[in-house]
Amino acid sequence: MTDTGIFMQQKTQQNKLRHKKVVDFHSVKVACKECSLHQLCLPRSINGADLEKLDSIIERKRPLKRNEHLFQVGASFHSIYVVRSGSLKTYSPTVDGQEQVTGFHLPGELLGLDAIGKGKHPCAAKALETTSVCEVPFEHLEGLAQELPTLQHQLLRLMSKEIFDDQELMLLLGKKTAEARLSAFLLSISLRFKQRGFSSVEFYLSMSRNDIANYLGLAVETVSRMFTRFQEDGLIEAERKHIVIKDRDMMQQIAGMNEYCDDSQDDQTQLSV
Amino acid sequence: MTDTGIFMQQKTQQNKLRHKKVVDFHSVKVACKECSLHQLCLPRSINGADLEKLDSIIERKRPLKRNEHLFQVGASFHSIYVVRSGSLKTYSPTVDGQEQVTGFHLPGELLGLDAIGKGKHPCAAKALETTSVCEVPFEHLEGLAQELPTLQHQLLRLMSKEIFDDQELMLLLGKKTAEARLSAFLLSISLRFKQRGFSSVEFYLSMSRNDIANYLGLAVETVSRMFTRFQEDGLIEAERKHIVIKDRDMMQQIAGMNEYCDDSQDDQTQLSV
DNA sequence: GTATAGAATTGACATTTATCAATTGTTTAG
DNA sequence: CTAAACAATTGATAAATGTCAATTCTATAC
Image (cartoon, rainbow over all chains, first blue to last red; front, side, top):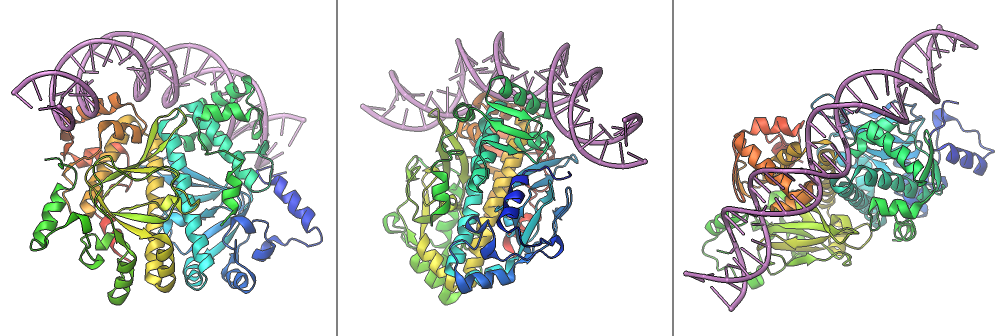
């Protein structure tokens, strides 16, 4: 069992939905309209013939294995990517040869938007588990967005969301204590799972403690201690990468958040035009 | 002299350029093609008749006085804004009634891109000094971008740049010590001045130490001590808001940066298509 | 299965930064 | 010009987090 990562549940679910199809991982070709991430992705609010146009420019690549790179730092920018299943981290090298994790990317989320401006990827993307993505050649996408107002709109919306999310995170990293950071991180992951139709209470983290610590600007040891403390305080149950949220309210208090991880209304705004 | 803020120099320059015009602040109406920020702004790489179309949808509002709001938190989103002169800060309220500064905005920079997704401004924007902005109604802009490929491209580029910049900052806030943060902050401001044609060595900071500390996730006292130490070490000269960079190389080392504030090549990528 | 490498946890200690308090300097309103 | 409010600095102390080191646990290769 090499693949106990985040999306075990999803795979099960997908198998259930189309159990008659033989999934050939070497030539995956699932149309956008059949994709379960439809609502979170570019095709949202595109219909019929237009969707087929979009579909035609999208390439589905063979799945990445754990630790394989989707792109490297400095690679020239051609496409943006949408995670279909699995998960990735993005990271930048720092002067002292370390890496700095800049984000985790779950199904339905876009990668590479930060590369449009300079035409080069400022960070690398590496799979945290077996992961498949859709590749969307950017020139084609731009051309298509030129024809399809709803696609242009959706593209701008998704980029705006990215900006918004980054600022929420900055807010987090800027001010909070270690426990606030970890709490907000877990709630954020929880919310993102919920938006994708998974349990927001119980889930697997595909990233290591090291990656989490790096991402949150903390030492691994601090993160580890916080996990321990959260369990002692009955906020979560954690066994390795398997997490259960026990006291969401308390965690929100600790995270000190206004609406970052409010799961009630966010879905609404998420899915409305 | 109520206006010793950042852009004293710019105003002087602008006056020089069109000293025969009477500047009526209550009905400022300078066409995009005459604007000194042309190259940094939306009209970049748009020409002739197209530029006039863009020009026609842009509203120039009366200048904001210090501490006036451009928009409040939660205000519904209609327009994005471009800073023409002066500067603003954006900030979000936190649970405990504090505010968290999320960014500073200099001439040529856009505000409001984070509001597109949800249709509401997630942060407030307040003028740090006398400040004038161009208002660009978003629906019009979207419509125009639909017609003009270069405008769509520039809009996507600017949003990408915003994402990129935010990630750079996250990188900073996530990992670094107090001195690295402040150093990187000063270098960032310096670079942004340079890109706008001002001195990158000597400039005025329009924001208070408090705002800087808040932005960087530090206590005011820590920021103050760092300013003192930087002066003792001969890295900068600082008298209140007036800053002179003395040892840029050393500051870059302290900031621990790869290319965030590298002023040599960045201008290039900034101005090329 | 067993050995080995890597990940996660825990403890002791050092360092950094926040907090509290007092002081000085600067801008604003009358 | 003067007083009052605000902003910035400095010092002393406490709290949080990082670092170093040892140990336990887990996954992988043989």
